[in-house]
Length: 114
Length: 114
Image (cartoon, chains in turn red, brown):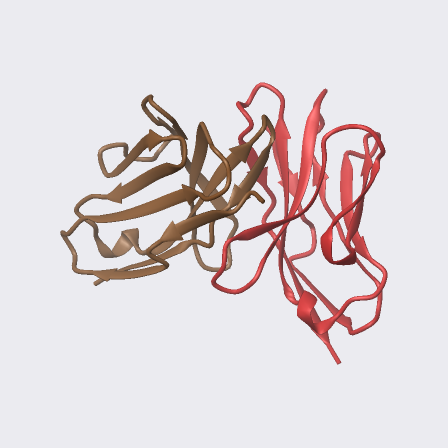
């Protein structure tokens, strides 16, 4: 079955420290990969996406992610976080042949403190 | 660009009544929209795929007679929760697809059924 795994349910980090949020997906021939951020009581905002081409993708708010096909991973990184980055982060994958349905991970709560 | 709105943002209703939630793509046309449900501190669960001019496709376990979806135009999809009960209380989020892969999400609707 197709699945997306976000191993860390919570990631506490100090402000200005780097952070990596991990995402692994079940192997497939072709996938599209997404990271979304959700602030409390709000919808999801697209951070970045990988459709094809360069495996290192840059998104909004200083985030970037790297697609690693051999490890079936798409980890999200930011070199220096800010208090305002505190939110829930969801990794999502579209598998070919699924009519562009998104399969979501369970989410990672990023908690940035001073 | 790619802005999706939802109305209302919050609704409280009595058990047994019906509630309609609107999802609009404000600056683009969307032939395909999606409806999700999100329980507290959980990921998004896809309820149905809404296609303009045709019947919605429901995910397994979602009652089509309870969650009526109408996608009457290229910018509007509606979800009607019929005869709502307290267990239908949840956060409902829609998304609209741009191109063939990317979904942009609305801000969500908080439904509370008393």
